[in-house]
Length: 230
Image (cartoon, rainbow, N blue to C red):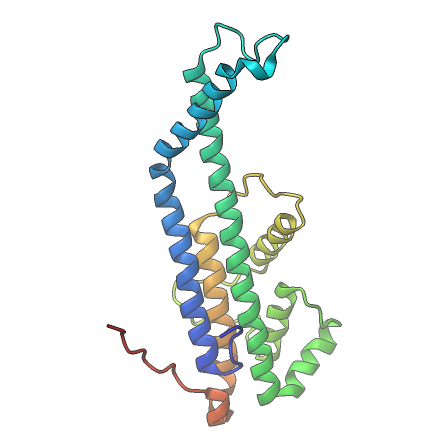
């Protein structure tokens, strides 16, 4: 599905299935980087030696590199830079994916609550004076409307931290708009886990207050099991 259905099961399945993709990407990227070193070494080494050996393209000019240049050392420097840049861009991609998944889950939670108690959601919007598309604000609006602002989350090993959510949200904006693209962002496994569990907490806030008032359509149904193909 392109977006989560605004039902309890739709949001659960969205978070479960999509976050599995982020975890796989993040884990495999980290594990795969060291194994690419051999290929990167061959590529960089070939590039440097080819540039030096093809002296015809520098006809009438000094060689691009001094005769005493240590190509092995230069190759190592370029490989190290290659590996560091790859890690930076993979971290940036993981954050963008994780943020998008959470953003869609929060949107679906708002749509679900609009069908259960639109008055409470409207009152929270009015009190805060915003209907901003800013994801951290929408999480706060949802928690306030459900009476969960400042309450225990009910999610194991998770503490809601609006400051952390705002920092990761701004970091994602800076990457997307190019201000930090290519810069180390210091993304941790804990940051990704925090974003994942924030989606769980948003749904917990809605179900914790309104589960008994939901219709069968609003609760939804679990996904049908898939039949393995031969």
